[in-house]
Image (cartoon, rainbow, N blue to C red; front, side):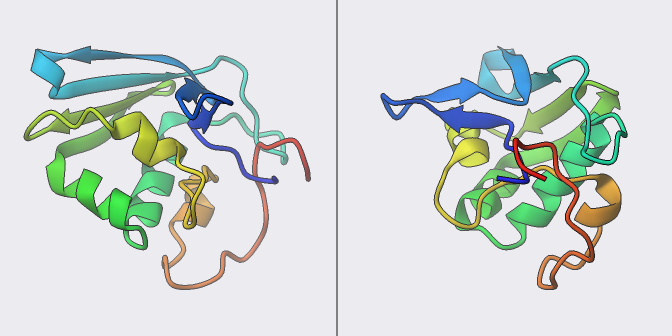
Length: 134
């Protein structure tokens, strides 16, 4: 529980915003903009940025079947500003929050970009998250 996720599963097995305050879906389901909650911090005191999350999603997707399926549908995954994660999709992918918030391993944990840049098949060199435990 050192790391946190963008979405979490509630008691009814529905996805709820966790690190994100919400999202918008446009262009017939082919454009998703996820907005990070304000004032999120990593345990080292640095601000959680959308670019950290983009790098974390890319790392996770290299090891996870749901992540791979999501990335197959992605035309663009970007961070147009510090709090926005943008998915421009080739076709609608209504399960995007489920893929990003699923609880089965591997989980799409968010980490600072410098850690997410670690080879996805190697252990990260330090543990810096934003979850409830340090």
